Image (tube, rainbow, N blue to C red; front, side, top):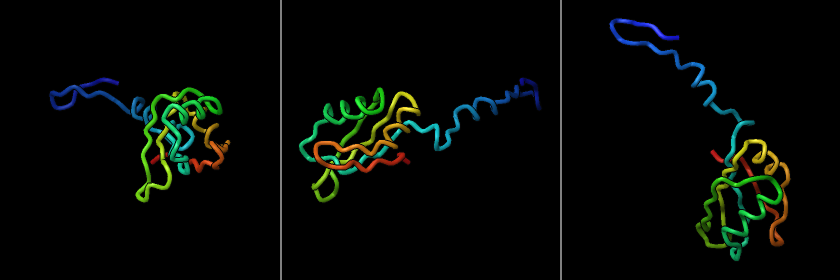
Length: 102
């Protein structure tokens, strides 16, 4: 909806805002913990792509004690992120802890 108000053009962005707003089921980013120290970014990417779907981006870092690696994984589709979240698969002998990223 377009219009004029006080000499300014008014554009209704509610449809755009509603399509951009995400709820829990539309999230694509996950946080993963308990990743072994020896795992590379390629290892983690391959694991998630094998079990869930296309990974759009991935960032790995060590926890404050340096005993495990953590990762943020962004999937191409929300359905793939949900699939990865529900699987809770083992990775290199460790059970991954996976949750939606905030």
